[in-house]
Length: 582
Image 1 (cartoon, rainbow, N blue to C red):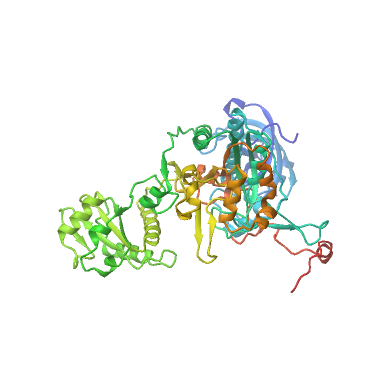
Image 2: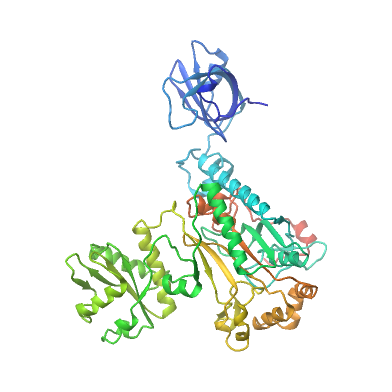
């Protein structure tokens, strides 16, 4: 090997050893008679020292040719440093070099290979292989490795078997857009890349593999954001002969195992909340429960006082921002303008200050007495020094707007600490949601989700009231996993397809293989899938999943490094029987 040790392992106990190190030059400091070189590899940094009075002249000459990111090999004696560096683990020692060889010179990189780099996102994505040398990125990928390793340890201990499912599958109309792959041997026909292994893991249950999991790549051709990539990784799981409670206990166990083994955090029992309560109290189905500021409805107290904005509203809803009564008018105006942005869409923001002297001052004093405001404050649990913020309008819109305001206030008040973790199960989602543009019902989760047994009769009478036997895990306001108890009997699955507007022919064409399988003794089964990239970013205290993926795409779905997607040549197009219409 070209090294006896790594650049991160030598300590004071290694003094007097002769060692050989290989790695990349982090920095060179030529002090005239003495040259210092910081040598870096995946494991850390070790300082090399060359002295004109004692080091071989060839080594000194070579050292003076070095620049950042040269790949070198150095042999020498481990000595104790005079000026020690407590910022690196090897800071007590340095290598007194006897020989030095350049294994490969390097061009000057386009950005600093340091934790605090001067490279922007685009340039770092174009030269991702250089970005990977930075310790911050390396630590993220090491965390990802440990997360995968500990997932497999937990799942294996619970008797799960890891099974690989196909990557070239059949395109289906439900869900996000598929990435499609033309078939050369079957002209005019296409494979799709899987959005998830959903039908295959259900077929594995039919096949008797009662505990399956897979850390699997999935693909969705959808608009991107910080927590989405066109290709992403799931921890995909399925179990037979179980009910919802069994799934919640099993995979709460997985999350707690990961927090303990990866972060050394003892997670408490994960609380549960219904979808209806999540929407009522937080305005969304993935509430951030690291802080309170729950919604308080004031509709009955606010109406009937000749204030048209409230009198015409379906919902008047408030949050109590603790300790914010000292907000200036300028701060409140700025917050109001923030709410009026197109992405929020509020028409305005009403406030009530609960002053330190016990008086209440609002932006609607013309319409409401101090007694009215006291009733609002009492319902909101407000105390002296608090600020009540209120929005109104159509119920769903008002809740969504207030949800954004609550999260913004949580951020401004420092209540969303990325190193604090709060998990939550959200249960009892609606089975279906109505698409106004398409004028039909869609599965809120997917078409294989079972209704709550007691709600099955509502499939004939009130589709909007049917609850799904489904569950999501939320951590710090991010959905990290979701699943459901599955339909496993053909008649109910046929009914579900009927509700979703499939003809018998369409259902048979798309999913006939699954319904046929249900007639050969399909067991009751349920499952869940966790977004592995999202889990890693949460554990790493980051908002974006990109730095936890070795080679991510940008927000346009492009790989800047290899310039993909790209065109293919005419010969390939002809082989695939694809014609362009440019």
